[in-house]
Image (cartoon, rainbow over all chains, first blue to last red; front, side):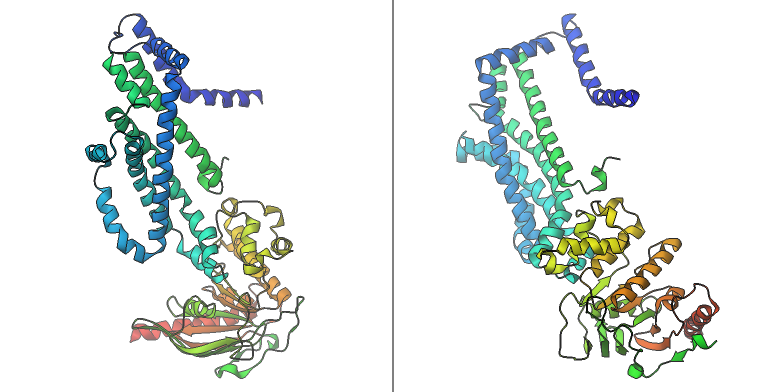
Length: 260
Length: 278
């Protein structure tokens, strides 16, 4: 009994063993002078920089600004992608009209638009949000469309024989059937969201985690640069965990998400 | 062998089954099914070529035939999944009277349960618009108990076995007390032992509820075991219409059943030999 519990606890630690171990080796190498502080500061130095910025409040302001940009971009781009994915998945006519244009836009790397975006929006919030919207739109659009298209036609036929209305058919059969694919799109979108934001903030911003990193580079504060990178990693992990949790809750029926 | 008196009915609406219990427990007896010169083509391919059939109220008709003979197409037309290209069919005595939407139900070879709905919710799908009426949940639950799965009501379909899923699909079809049931190889994907117990269940619910049943099957023994009548469809028309007068409960593997099975297989086989010779 206690053996099983112990094993369970131990398994909880296993995924963290490697990162923690690497951190310890890194710290030791820095302390011993194997790695120069100018190239890569020790973890303790990064932690100290984090503490310093946290006390001054700068850290939280920048994190808040970045998180807000990410969230606003995700909501706008995600909603657009989801709605267009639904529309084009359910209506051949809508797809005929819009899909060619969308595919053309999709094939332009959205980060290539940065110079144009700066000309249009300056280095305002709108510029960053616009880029994030572009970044998250396509993964969600394509996966929603794919999800709707691949709903089991036998289930749709079943729904029709039991007299489901179009709305019921959508709500009870098509949408839940497309959901696993939509979640795949969401998790891709989260990746693009951070990537876009990092690039946008390092090029054109006056606040945010990316801006903080750029400022630090100017003053050769390597510890703050590393801290910024770690914060991005942390925020990314947080977003992905949230998406996973959501997935686990919404797809509890799916054999892949049933423990046992 | 008087108990197994066989009769070949070539003229279609020739006999009426002796009136079984015309008022079933819920007062919804089976509806007769009348099919007149029914045709269905997919492009140039004529699948049904003017099919005539009359099925009296409450009769259990087994439909056999080789793959592609049109038997499944016939069921799909009857349950409204496809539109006929010619001819007509109706339920009940009057051609111009439409039964309510829950009167005709179909059960497929695949259970077609919603994977994201619990077992009980899947049964409730069968109530159609009546799902929101008071007592709907109780009706679904009692139907689920009727197929022996009342204690699994809160499970996801993915944890059930193939036979159990098919039982849930049966409960979903039965919950609205249909007056005509179309079975499209409902047991085709089950293992032999599960099949036997499911055949017993099908016969039992049919006797209890009194619906008219049409069952397409590849298994001739199953057709004889369950049917009041076995119909052979070949190349889009009915080529054999055989009454099964063996009293119920029938015994699997009895000589009467074997004899009938042999006759039907002969009819299927002869045709094959002729076409091979041609």
